[in-house]
Image (tube, rainbow, N blue to C red; front, side, top):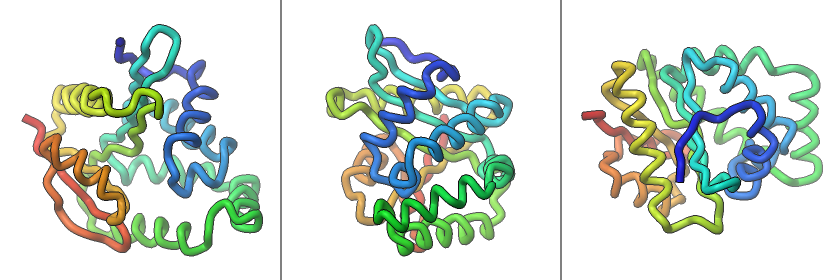
Length: 194
């Protein structure tokens, strides 16, 4: 197993794995949207970190983080174009995602941004390919990301998940995260980087 930085050449595989392994609104909107998200993330390597865990040719898992969610959101706002809005509407019309799901996520992000924590270093995504789950790979990715962020002077990392996702909450708590607060339908957890 080898942890390495995500490259643009990995994008198609990562997008498919993301869609297959996460049931988030972004996954439901579709691969074209995910490609734009990951491209923005990868193009801002001064701000963002994207790692993958590889076993031979298989991508076992992926973790992405940003050193400041406020800055990342500015980058993401630049991709809001008619074609992206069309993808949102199409996902709603064909019932891949509900208006309520999108609204809850948007509401959560707006409430989070109002908290005005600067910088706000946060894990954006983490997923393990289903055939590799349960092997401690998520822990390896979190630990590696934590070390990289610590070397960059980050003292605390945040992550959020739906309050109904007990498996994810248990995973983060087992890795030393502490529950900070609930906002909208999500839970924010934090971890001191020592």
